[in-house]
Image 1 (cartoon, rainbow, N blue to C red):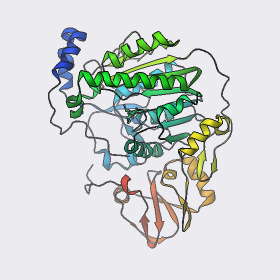
Image 2 (cartoon, rainbow, N blue to C red):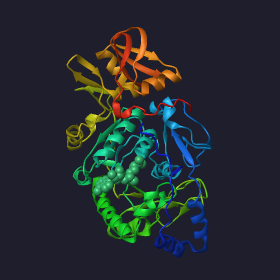
Image 3 (cartoon, helix red, strand yellow):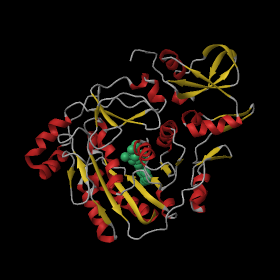
Image 4 (tube, rainbow, N blue to C red):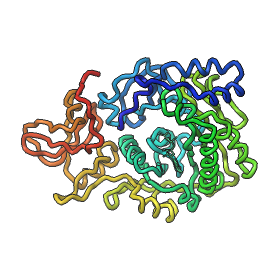
Length: 435
Ligand code: SAM
């Protein structure tokens, strides 16, 4: 996994923009002092466990997310092999309210065709993959090339066979109105990140708020068209600006028939507005976040999620693939979206890095390529993750390197050692080994 950022631990924070504080004072009255004080505190650390994989740190539960935990200290995540194996994801707790939005829509555990339009680095996508039924197809999309690379790594490591990752513009989805659920975690002015990201403070301006609001309105139109009748749109931002949250959705509802689904956060901290709910750091242990759920009118024929997972042209076909509309399958295929399992190499078929993390991919891979598994202790797992070769008595063929029973990556036998095949960008760069 890309190393989670240090979350303001060493950053020198620029002052809060005066115009931002004035806007919040107009909205909150004297409560603004509590907000400003909270924005001066160190941000809390939280993680979300992967239900497909055991292990990872535990702490106080996040009230609105069954797999979420607040940690009392921030460990050196980079030095935990379980993070690299996809056992958990480091995520700000407010974002985990996605779970309550899905609960409001009655979607938890159901099989759905879902789109996460603005998915990188993958917080909402990995959460969706854990919340929806196993026969869902979850399309994780990110338009920005660099961020798409990070999304690939995080989604691959989460190890769900029903994920597809694409890099398509929003307009492409308006042409395929087949989704039961679309999550629009919109690019925003980032006010809710002002505690942990210095740039959130320096980049903010009323002009940025307006520019984001205009883009969000356009993205809303696209994703609304992508929904099937009766489908659910989850809209969220990490900002508090009315123009990007309640105000934007209020205007959208004036022009579109939609039902607002009330979200119950299961905790008094997040504030319920007319349309969505808002987290503020002086009211709950989270950064800034806004989330709302809207249902499109109508009903669609139930989606047939039958079929088994198969390997086709080196990639996984999730269950239900054949029931997806042809136009959608073609888009996913053209974008090389389905989970890769096998690579064609001059030396014959070899495991794709993504296959190390997914049980179903490994089962199908083993039928095509003989595989050895090698269980590593903590120090050797870190050496492997740094890109080192691992000494062995007899090393032949392809080996899956594991830690605590979870796949970490691949190596190739060279007699007395396993040569490292872990992708260079996924390697850890620090030489330190103390946790
Ligand atoms: N959902 C992500 C998560 O939970 O990890 C965070 C998404 S971030 C708030 C917003 C994303 O929108 C960014 O990755 C950004 O590249 C993307 N984005 C920016 N402009 C966009 C556009 N015009 N169309 C689609 N996505 C855009």
